[in-house]
Length: 297
Length: 231
Figure 1: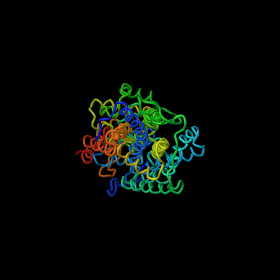
Figure 2: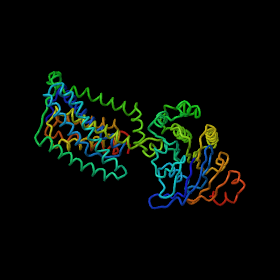
Figure 3: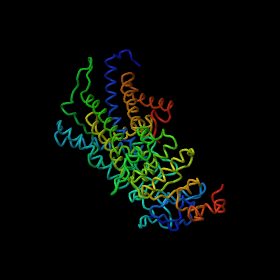
Figure 4: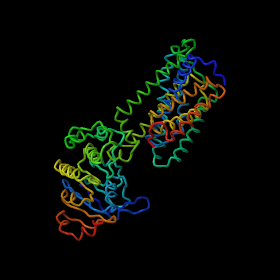
């Protein structure tokens, strides 16, 4: 373990990289947390929707020749495609299963990870795909002697925007307020004249939209491949658990812990970097078994 | 306005209501009196549809609506105030009211009007409902039900667990609701409050209606009170 060579600039750079990773993790896990908190559904297929988001982004952007405009269109379209898929899933199947126990819902959504996995294989094949970042956010700029990718900076801007959007949605809109009420007492929401089933559909679609958005944003930063669904869903569940089940701001906190420990771990002990975020999860759960912020469950 | 015909309700396998029938006419306050566990709350839940009856009929405004979903009953003009003060604890007082608001042909209740009737709520409108006192929460559940603009209100034990002063205050407000044109079915254990407020009473025990009469009849009939209401 050699930490003698760590400079402040290198540390700063990794912190920024970690925070841009946090953005993706936050967007995906806040969607998971929203669905978990309001609908009480542990949606294992959330990671699959993220993967679909990435593949659709690839296809749409490629259709436009991977131009900047093409990427922007893809960024707008891909999450909507994912939202549409989730709407069909919710109205067609899930909405009939809300009264079932969690284990049933877990198995049901797990089944859909397999279905979606095969679907992606059928449409895109099993090859790797890669997408370059649009020209305006390509390359790096100099950060005290270290290169910092422009795309990471773009992610650092997107993260707070999504967080702000979610805050406005849950606190300032009627559907958001109803969703917060339904998270705690859905029966009573029904008894004040609100069609809870429609609220659930809306929240589910919004949550899945976030998975799609995460997939779209991550597309230029890594290989788009089968299996990216598994990695993200494990991370997202851990984040939601350490943040406090169903708490969106907990997801933000959890994502920051996960993203930062991962990035700094790479700096400190590259061969074992993957151990750092999981160790952080263990430590958080030892100290606060119910998560950092108030869990809705 | 509301008629129950021989409803039988179960919680899972346990049979709770055994052929309950009752009627509430427009403009009345009718009281459902009974001990703890007699079946008052279950009757209320059966009417609003939270625990739909397995047999029998719920007729509201001339329409048979047995097993209709609660939100549809509310949209037909039925307000529901549960017995356990289920305010949305994470939402503020104003938000609790806001999400319940439903416009109807003749919208009588708005946020302003509700605050007029419950001035105590106006001064704490920004506070989270989970931090309110029992009396404030009870007012909020009633106010919340009013925001759905009902013509008929199911009021389940509104005075339960409240201090006498607050009970008196609430009693005045409930009487005010009738004057505002609401029909009320009131479940109560508090005999005095119930008899003062209501026109007619049904006494329920072990899931069946045991007696039915005007409040005056019940007052002059201590045997019934002894038999069905004393602990």
